[in-house]
Length: 281
Image 1 (tube, rainbow, N blue to C red):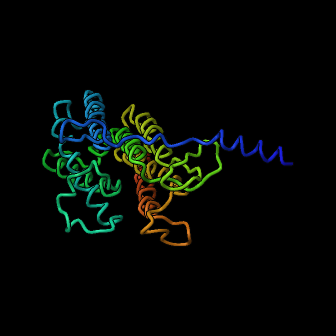
Image 2: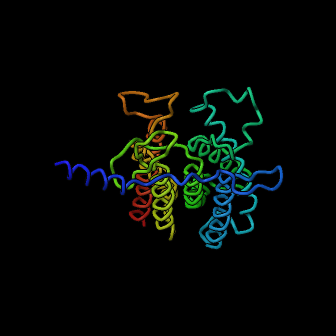
């Protein structure tokens, strides 16, 4: 019996992963520190611009390749301002009024996806209004460009050593020393895989050919909401917020549930529009 226990403990120790303790500063140039978190956002914006130019070459898109420069500026402002304001509204422990310039320091963390999404929706709506584009048509164009940036952002969370999951006995559990010796779900990597890679492949696949207006937007909203809702089951809630209800509902789940409903609504509406179009032909 003793030998079995020793063997079990040995296997457990062998199966545990340890956080690599990555320096959050990517490059130091004299007094200037460039953080990995900021680098990840730059990569996300760069991928969105590149993918957007690829999509804009199609005849069924509402914008051309040359418009991607302006569209990226609108999107970047929406992400940063919305993300920071969303964090201040939903997650921050101290108000940004005490340090207004903190809204510009995205490399320090403190970004909320749902706030960033609202910011992008507002920015894209303004762009659509100024250029005479239907907002849903622009949403369908932009939706496939977002997920790679989400993947990069979650990698930035992992490098920063934030947003850890609950303790786990699974073999890929990772020990993060500041939180103690227990292996934990690397929930940032789960989100990177689901919200980033899987969601990108799904939305890009759906958008590979013309779709009824609103379908691609709906797939993105519902897909992200489902991915985030699932990962929140194993992700630790913010310590100063805790669970909102029932000992399990997190802020992330509360904010993602409406996305699932709205996204499903767009999908159903778009498919009905396609069916009605076929029946009228």
